[in-house]
Image (cartoon, rainbow, N blue to C red; front, side, top):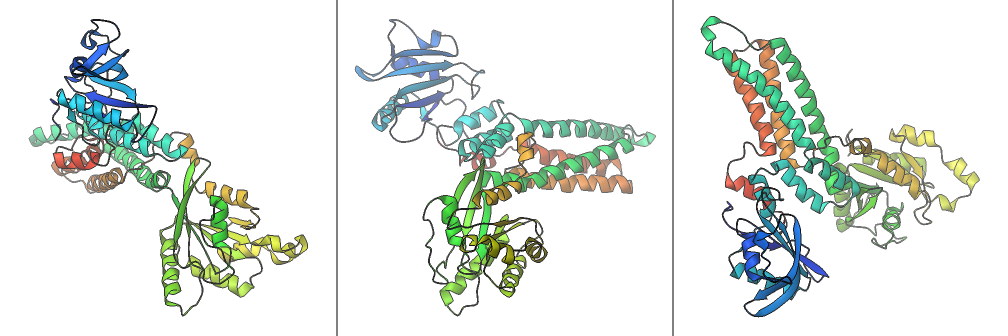
Length: 471
């Protein structure tokens, strides 16, 4: 467990060479420690006497040696990120200078901060709840506009407010139910059971909505997995290279060139997609290629979107076979996009003769069908639009609460199980003490998300250990 009596220090900017670096100190002695090694250009100026939220220019001095010219920003608790007195030192960005400045502060009483310790202090000092603290890490790690927006919405407390509102309403009811227990001999009911049934149904619906949002949230946070599958030489590797605009996969006319899974990510309209090029599906006696095909089917099962590449010149029985093989590995929650490739090899008349959209719709059961030439890079925009359609951008645009954290998802599932028991108990007319126990379980699981029920150092340490140092 961190000791809030300590003053800690860390470099808060990215590692390596840069024009400037920011070194942050927080704790009771942060400003005083800076003061002890700071020489202002204004004679006699002391940082501890300065107003909050002010910036001061001067030099850091180690004994008689001037280390660097710096700007020091002073923040005073509780009006700071951590809720404590804080100083941020902007020095020149050479790694050697950063190290010497750190050593200077440590020599004068500061301790090196642990990963995530600044944010953990903000949580412990009541500046944010745990879900907001975790959103800080998500914001730092965001790789797309959608991920940034979802993290910002959570960091501002949108998710917390939703949960707080639920808990307040449940707390009101459990107070009335437990009051009944004090008057059990009088056989009175203070809590309107019908009103409680309505609230329980409302909470069940909301929890289900939050739980279901995790699929979208997890995809936005980690990238939406898209498996590119089909028979050999359908153009899968060419499509991957075209989408990524680089020669990521080997392209050859030889069947079975791709024998392993190749992955890379790209951002399309603010959404990160993780494209997976797979081995071509065919019957083969080659042991290594067979392993690659097995991996293809595995990737189909784990993908959110499956792009089935078909050669427009393929005979109907081969198309039937490819669609059947792929659909056998898919579930109803996955999106299938049929991409009919190599249209550049045919004239418009030949395309009209060979391409019948209704036939492909009937076979694949999807309206998401595009014609393209991966080699000539035509039809890629239409494919991108189909990919974007799979993401509920309306939810992001409307700043709806979207669950992105697996810990929150698990706590919501446990909450849903508990509230379902409350609903069953109300229907069966169980006694107030059992009803109160089930409601308390719901409250406990919801509080786990915001940190209200987390007491152990081990759990908090596990949450913050993956934060970067300096945040």
